[in-house]
Image 1 (cartoon, rainbow, N blue to C red):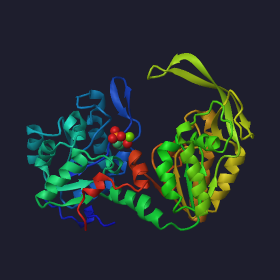
Image 2 (image 1 turned 180 degrees about the vertical axis):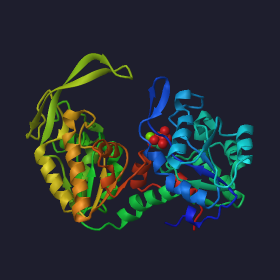
Image 3 (image 1 turned 90 degrees about the vertical axis):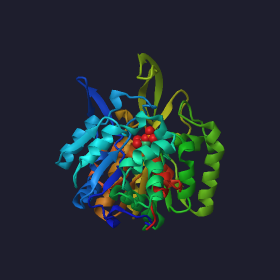
Image 4 (image 1 turned 45 degrees about the horizontal axis):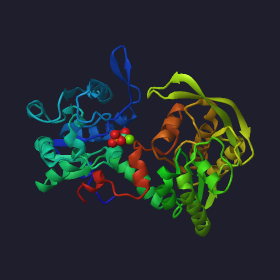
Length: 418
Ligand code: 3PG
Ligand code: MG
């Protein structure tokens, strides 16, 4: 990586402005917000420990949710400060603001190795607007800038890009944290020079979300396995009936182009050969957004590439699982992004779980490098308690996808070159 990292920095006695992605899932329990998955916090610990050891004063900024410029207690980072203190084994200070007097006072009292977390930067609209005056206010307590927030690196916001520009203009250094470095290594360098065969598993709902990734990976992969609802848009492109499956008629031409590019590039491009289908039925119940809850009745395996009328395809079937598992078993590099079906519903989780098992087996028994591209595939692996049995799981969602598309992430671009 051509960017400066925390390893290269001398931070003794300096104020290190450290952007982290602590956008963790929270749930209300007995009137308190409780963190349900601390992965994003845990993954920053090596960076924090290194900077503490080097004698820096760590001032952490982060966002939580999308409060849209307003204070919202359900999106406060206060519970994160408590959790971070427990995980780090040292006191973590917290300031209920991210700019101004209270922050400057707290920072003035810091000693080498102290850690302070500031309140949600998105309580200010100027954060997402990347407002230069707001960046200057944030940068008041920054001698050095470090970005370990890979998950937010696709955002050109004040704390992910603006502050770095202010620090750099003063001649200060802007470096990547160890998590950022690892993310760029696995999602970048490792996939640019993969051990072969390089097998890519792509799932999720929409072709339109993944088409740039598909297009780019068609240049690099030996095999691409498609699952999730987006498989049905490919079916549509091949002229089959898709019943009530989720499809994107607007993306049919795109799907056709991908299929022909796969032929030209000699990439093995596999689509499901069987499906788990079920009949969607609207119920009287409403979901959190006030929409009627859909129930899926009579799940059955269908081997007809035409999805039976009145039913929707919701998971890959057992013959597809077998074919995909065989490809994965022979792989030396695996990239997986997106579930194979509606895995949140256990009736349709078998395909995703079987692929997870196959990826783990290839990693553990034949030494394949397995890289999980964030978002729902990470959720699925964690749910199956297999998270620690793959080579790398990204902490990014949108950021991983944009990076895999080949985009230059603003949070990375803002860092100093080596
Ligand atoms: C995420 O959870 O994807 C990141 O923290 C970025 O959050 P955002 O999508 O609200 O910008
Ligand atoms: Mg997001």
